[in-house]
Image 1 (cartoon, one colour):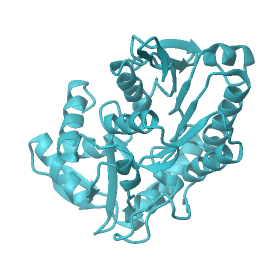
Image 2: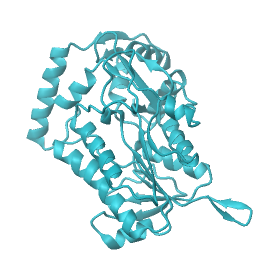
Image 3: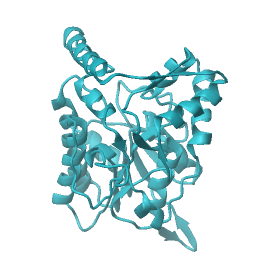
Image 4: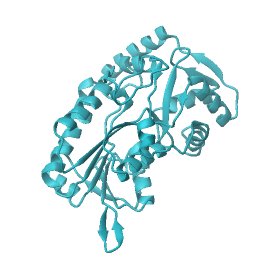
Length: 334
């Protein structure tokens, strides 16, 4: 951080994706921590989650003039924006790969003061673990199994290939992220509200989790600590779907009937979802790639490297899941 007399001056931080779920939590934490924040917005953006204290700049990667306004004076960039759903695989690569690298190139060309580029990737870029005893490490060979994971990995590789010694690169790979404002895991809790806890993966499956607030905390800790390279981040525990069902049961205050989704039925749902998506032109909530992801038994990672760099998750699932359920209820989502 630069000094103003004896007082450190915190850098202006550009947050992409501040209009969305995880990115808005990042913008909240930065502002609470005293950082000036600039949020990238588009003319079509829903601004309900963007903090009022954040400066909003409308920009488009295809508009050089808007990019210059966007990056003027920016010293840190937290790139949260990306596509998590798509009608066709090419959309993931257009947004997650090409969009990330276009932003990176724009920063190199138009932002002389940028010191840090933090890219929020995904555990999907690494792929699922082969065994319950072998959670994925950053040093493992990446083996994504979906276009989404492949697009995130391609962005990581492109950033490394286009590295600039003036700008520190950080890649953060979260597993399943949950918390208030999230609509990705909402379906699970809507089933639970009806008295059913769907268990989508095979018996004995395990998964890593992180609350959105802790993901934001991990990013800020790594940024402030001068870290660089790739980091897996999690809440420090390996979870089962049965444990998540237990926590949902307590949060909802009712007994839930566990229902393990047969793999054949899941694959059929993926086929139907894909067909309906093509027919309607809308992104389906379930498709073949999503089913393949869900049925993997070990979406688990080793977050010890981030913990060695100073990150500690503060919201265990025992606290985070009830918080999320209560937020859904307060907002009328459940």
